[in-house]
Image (cartoon, rainbow, N blue to C red; front, top):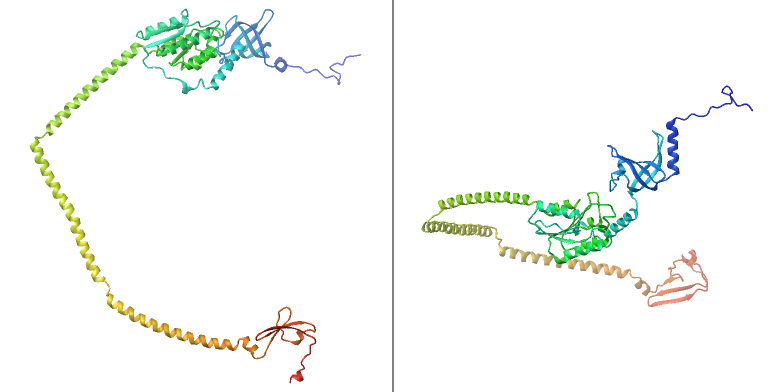
Length: 457
């Protein structure tokens, strides 16, 4: 069978891909096929770029892979990776298209074997935080002038030498008490908690430093135990925690009243330099001397002013007597003037009352005369009304139906109570009610005869 040629119209040339498109498709295939996963290995060829990105190789005994961790992720790592470190990384498998290199993009990195420790750290931190052990309102203020500072650490620790050197340099007058305790190893946490409680129980120190030098998370783990955190919380004196380096955080740091980045920093927080206090006291003394001089100067000027205004007792008595007479005259005038004014007002009111007072005798006589006229008018009106009422009663009596009945007439009603005026309204065998002058009677109709007009005439 012949293969089609380019000249054959049915022949379709295969699509041509660029290297960029090829690497892009391979990268997408890798990312879809391999989701985020934890990978363990040893760091080699570690490089920190000026941009902040980390580049290194992750290897084991039989293979290796290039790795990159971008600055946005690297800045949250709690330690600085070094050559030969055993680590575990959570990474995405991909392809660097520019060089066609297969690599992994690291999202998270931790020292190998510390994953369980870190999880325990997070769980304990959340538990104690939910109990309010880390609340700010539980933090105690540090004393301004501690006379005695207690230190909980190992006598062989380099951190102890750093703290003592800093205190000797800054505040040689401060007394130091060491409460020895191992800072790592089995049962170290119990010993540290016991030393803290001993310092609290004795009450010898004004301030307590709990410190240790830097190390791995395993080395610092004694300060992540619950017993240490609760001992710090129950301590009756303020506690400064200075464990590890600046990037190291322990449960003791959160439970302490103040967290220092290093043991030396804890010593610096605990005691202000003696030279600073002496300088401050010297400046305060100078300010006090200036204030005293100013107060004395002002007081001297005040004494001079008072001495110029000072009078002899006799002159003061004469002055007070004149002042008293003046006040007596003013009081007399103040009392008499309102009385005179009110007397004048009262006189004017009496005159007005006399002028406008009505003549009661004339008004009383007028009232009696008007009363007589009113009684006469009422009597006449009542008599006229009574006469009219009698006339109306006589007319009403004439129209009274009872008088008509008494003359022999009767009122005929049917069973419905209707008054009958026409014989046509009466039927045979109807029952009728007849109203008479002295009562009523019921009758039955046997027959009805109409009254002829001619007969009526």
